[in-house]
Image (cartoon, rainbow, N blue to C red; front, top):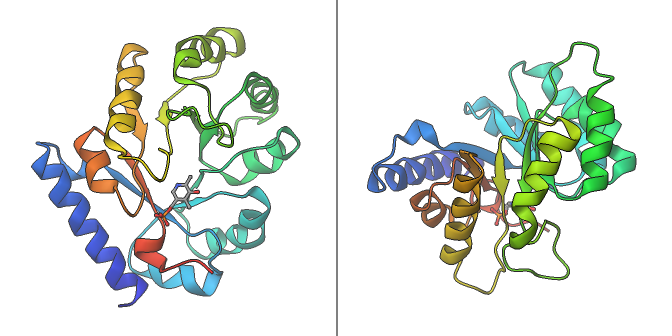
Length: 222
Ligand SMILES: *Cc1c(COP(=O)(O)O)cnc(C)c1O
């Protein structure tokens, strides 16, 4: 199967999962995760109509996306991996959505960067929540999430669009998706970034509005 075939299959599965949950398929945005893949692998997926892509490293994205964006206007690029404060300027030049706002220092740096955009629209922001409280994983702890949302909004003047999580890979993801949805609801947030190749249908049942799907489209990563 080609990546374009895989894309059609994933799109159909997203629509099926949405309908099964009583939702409009258009309420779920597919973020095609192209990390580790080269422009030559990405072009056929763009040609098949996909416009929303995700990358987890600023440096890697900087190497391939400016050219791809120039070839195809209308690309929307999402940062789904951790963001170092010294890469904020590059991130603001490249990304339309950042899913990985996860600490006060980054909120402060983003607010500073937004002030220098000179009319360009700032990226939309999602706060990453470490729903499994895993020490090696980025994200605010669930019990810190409400305070961090408030700090971003009131302390830094940042508009927050939603929340993102990556459940522990060896656990049933459903309780993690449910927890993220609950934290979002009580903070008045309606965008949820959750679900990857193995579990996007479950995530959609729990309200995902962005699913981040890599290997099911592009194949296994080296
Ligand atoms: C790599 C990655 C994905 C995509 O994972 P697949 O299992 O290949 O679909 C999703 N989200 C994040 C944060 C990632 O780093």
